[in-house]
Length: 335
Image (tube, rainbow, N blue to C red):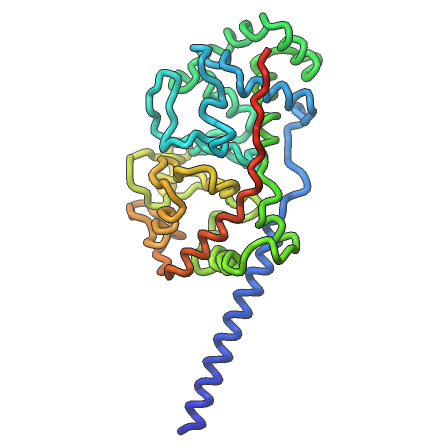
């Protein structure tokens, strides 16, 4: 009888060792997927140059891009707020509260879809939308070209940055996109860890990563260098009847589905979710742990996780490693 009990214990111990070894191996293999790509993809007619980036930076902070000449792109995408605005949902130039949150610009260079519902595939397309939208900056694009053209410094900069094109609606979009592609989170503790520095993050955060790619199932949607599958998911949020991606692609499974946001710089970009419903990462983890709240059209990857308090803390520590050192951003002097 004792022999049978000892054999049973040995079998259990062996099983635990195998499971632990398999989880560790899986986590180590997954680390490779999170390394930064060597290059970003840019359109052939808008290759990056310092002149284009500098011009786009000026335009990004330029209030003349709005109909009232009072707000700029940076009014909603504030560098000190993680390139978002710190509000649950955006506010337009007339101080009307909108229905969706201002997404961060961190790592937009690596995205394949833009806007929460993914209606644009190119950053150059997206750049003009808030400027022209009556619900946002409310500027007439032809009028904008005229206004900027009256400023000699802009005329010169466009001629240098875009020879044979000059100042047009298209080159305004190109310049803005060029600057936005430089807003990249890099050299975070997590990056140093996946590149071989075992001291870059804590042991607790390493266990958090094993949970991230395993039991917590975060990597089902948040994977790769930018921590996103660039897909659209209904995660069971309360607070509104926004149909999200369904308005672009009317497939029933996309009702209430929104783009998976990057987790880069996540500690600087609260509130969270497309409707800004959660003010803390703890609340976000609790949402996923209970498997969402609204079950209609819920993505099949969303299910109760049954995480322990310790596991939730380990996940939280991991998320904190996704943010690099915050650089003080100096607003440019406008012409």
